[in-house]
Amino acid sequence: MNRIVDAVQRAGVRPIVASPDPPPTLAAKEDWIPLRTKSLRAVLQNWRQMRRVAAIGRRMGGTVFIDLYLDKNAWAAGALTSFGRRVHVLHHSGQYTTRRGWAGIRTTILRRHLRKITEGGAKVLVHTRRAAATIEDAVGTANVEIVGYPVLTSPTRSDRPHHGRPNLLFVGAGRRDKGLDLLIDALPLIQGRVALRVVGAQPNGVRRILDPGNSPSIIWIDRRVTDEELRDEYENASLAILPYRQSFGEEGGASGVLLEVLGYGRPIVTTPALRSQLPPDGRGAEVAESDDPSDLARAIDLALQRLDDLSREAAEVGPAFIAENHTYDRYVEALAAAANSVLP
Image (cartoon, rainbow, N blue to C red; front, side, top):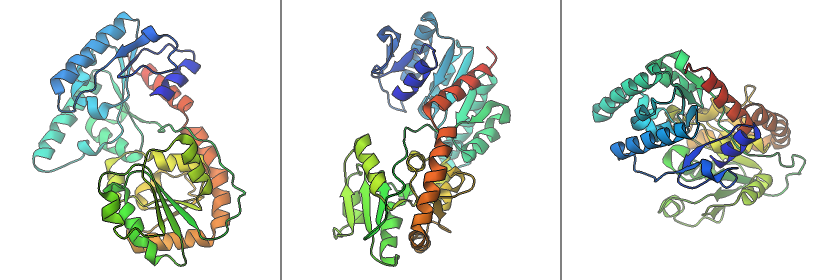
């Protein structure tokens, strides 16, 4: 959000920001509306808070309401009808897909609620084609747009020679849908010796479950890292591995890690779950046939066999793709265009 605020101000537009903490670069501190974080289940409290923010924002001169987190705010979005122009950003569409039992009832109600919101003039923005297809099924194509999820990156060196044991990099928490367990199972199947660096704070118990023997080939950086540290990790990685399960793709969310890797111009091995989020020509990446560990190991072997060519392709394609589709300035342009397309 802070980077979106920066981009809005670069565009010469005054942002009024409602958030738990004031954005550090907000030009006028009186343009900040403080919020209290509420549980997703606190529907009535969230609705009242959203209505309060809308009323304050209108009094301060706001003309467009941008909701950056419809995932949480879906039940409270009806409190925003005082704004003629409303844009809601939805990051994951899984709760709008067909489900069974009580979850299915909840999905049916949510889809009806979303349809009511868009019939009132709001636009929904999503980050992937999968999410767009799901939401369009509920509200129609005219009310949904795809925008590139924004990331802050810069290319790393692409001319560094690769010597010694290849360095594989996994960034993020070892959640099941991100497939870190599949990658660890694939390590013994890879031809030759490799090292795996797992970078990012892990949920309690993940290291003990996935690496009970403290394998010397796995290096855990089990904490939050700075932007500079993460850049160094990308710089020194032979391959970035994103072994995501198909369930991740079915949720319709964008992979920020994938976009970061592309922006840094680093070669990638991933699974079909992220294929649609790669640049159209797929250069600079090797996609496994499935999210099975044996298929993942084969894809890593293939990538290592042509690592120099893959690295050059990644440096050529990735940063250009991000600059065209996934910068914060482009994101703000898309938000403004969506808002302007909504009738007040």
